[in-house]
Length: 154
Length: 416
Image (cartoon, rainbow over all chains, first blue to last red; front, side, top):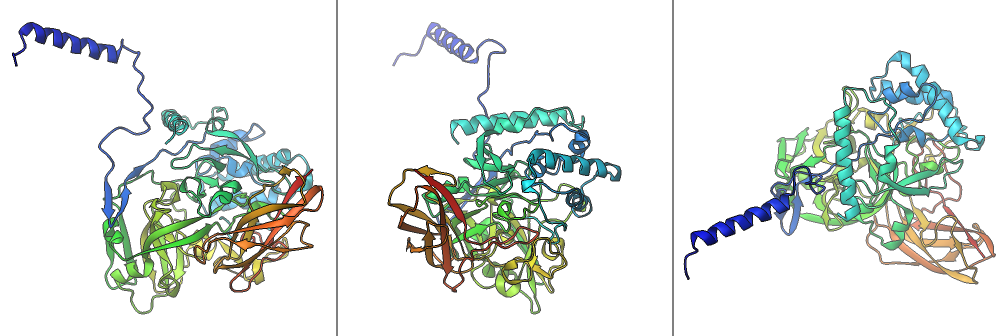
């Protein structure tokens, strides 16, 4: 087989360059494909007796849902969105002011939520009003007058 | 990952970036309801008293279409129709429940270590490879949240407002907890074993989520450490790389992302055993609504339950003299012995035919051909007896934690 001439090499090089430029496109037009994680080597894995575990990396959705507008919404948004979504409160049945107070107190005392003492009445007011407004009718009213004595969760 | 999921993942990354970029501003600026960006439509959990609409979402890693109870930290409920398709709940629709928001989002299988320490002869830290070389066991078992169906309590109680889908059944592959404990050598006088995990509280001083079992329970050969779920590794949100499996007991003990086992010379008196997940020490964990100051014990064994799954709440069908009806049952801490169904609100009951037995801790399918009254509203019920002779009661229980619901459930359909 004949060795390529310098001219053939030049044409080949030009072709490769043009192709590369076409693929890259003009400045600013390149949109990377959606890649949630940086492309690197395949994740490490362990295989023993026919079963494989592969390292895993995920992205969890960020919740930017705020509490609905209302008196003291700014206070509850500032205090009660970093540890949990607003939906935790918004999905509750109608709770009395005493029940909301028990919950807010538990968040502060047991779960160490950094809520300033001065903000607590506003948060309870907001939740109590929201609870009733969201329900509309009183039929779903919780009749349990006692704060949850079980420590809750689950 | 399908196309939609890929797009959502990209969107999630973008929003995470924007959120990070905005940090420092304390972020009270009126944000639009961006949760809508990760949801598709609403579903109705039919909770008494309302506030029962929940969005559906497919935006969570390793998860398909789920009922969104809370984004952060995730509470994802399995839609009931999933249980009608297979006795084993697919990993991508298995319910998700986390207490604390600091959840590791990256797990390196080479670096991961499981420690066994405390009241043992030789504290150890074993790799996943070492764990996977131990003798293996596989078991079908229902994993059910203590508060599953809490939203159905009347009067309603506070807490995660689950419908019936905070549960799932899987084939768990792993090793016996006893074998792992023996690697370290449990000392005489051990009383309980406490389990810790990689997730952490988001604020300093808050109680880390840890649960404990009595030493005899931990060593019974049934409690296992699972690295496989329905034939593959666990989704990260279900506890990858390993979780505790406590067959017949509520999910609170099935510690996800298990990385620490501590043998205790006395009972665990920390928050999650001493204060949380406590039930009334009364038959059926039942007290009068509003009761307080009753003695409590940590929640423990599950009880029999069953559901109609071939028809959904509120569904409309053509009226016929008889219809096929199907559903699922679980025995709780033992097998399913029998399931009866009623199509007239519990006045008359009919036997069902049980499906294949996948083991005493598994869901079990039931099917029947049943006469229909009507036309009109029809109350469908199913009632399970377990192999210990315990049957589901007609009357619901009540307790302030909303734990251990197990009464006969009703699915109301309309025939015309």
